[in-house]
Length: 345
Image 1 (cartoon, rainbow, N blue to C red):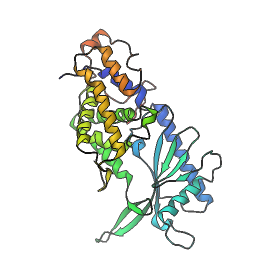
Image 2 (cartoon, rainbow, N blue to C red):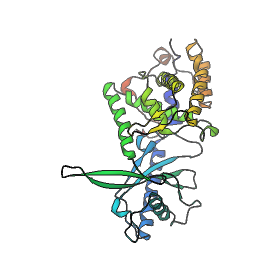
Image 3 (cartoon, helix red, strand yellow):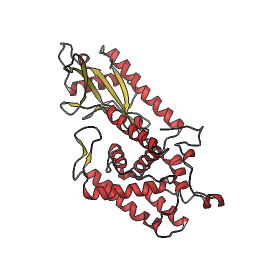
């Protein structure tokens, strides 16, 4: 059954209300760099060694961050130390807790912030006065003999009481690889999938009281990648059909596998995934009107209801030529906003 065409409406909504503008991207980069500089200065003042590398990860690195009216942004920046540099004054190796505390102490030397950095289970978090926060997972780099005269580097995260084999960069490579493969198969398909990820994350956080109850961005990303249904020139239809596929899968199981590790992102019965499934099921009920011969006004009201906005209803009526051909040629598709032609992703 055909779906009422709100393709242009959805593209405008994504560009105006969901993805970050060029100015916002630049601001995120500035905030990340400020956090890195604070850590560098703090470690020098504490007379500790600097990390071997720092690497953006999560939605920032995948280019799937979405706008937030409360400036509740989560910037993930992995801190990687050589194993020999994570030792105490006696040369004894630091525990995962001690490694995180070292980073936390270095960040906390800057007294200009209302909130001190805090140690969490798997990262160090610094909350900024503007509302956003930077999470710094702490890693150590171990070297192991590969058995052939060479060396393998093993990356381990300072977790809750143990060093856990982990490297978030592999997850970023996985996602970017999927996008690239889809784009090779069909120009713009991977870019559409990234937009569907952003739109789905925007929906999942569209109400303030949902934010703490719904599942994480990486779980949503994995679900979209696994169940993405492309629709050339129609982000609205791609979003709707992808949501249906995700809903159907979550009815069978709320377990979500990790894209690169043997562990799961979510286990069976996970409360946050279950909450997301419940809200997705509700949204699809609201959007059922799109397949029942509705009017444009009814279609826009449905999307407004789902995203808790009045954006769609306030859009102007499409021009006559748009009504005859309500799609975007593949050659014109990109994640571009009307703010200096900034591109994100």
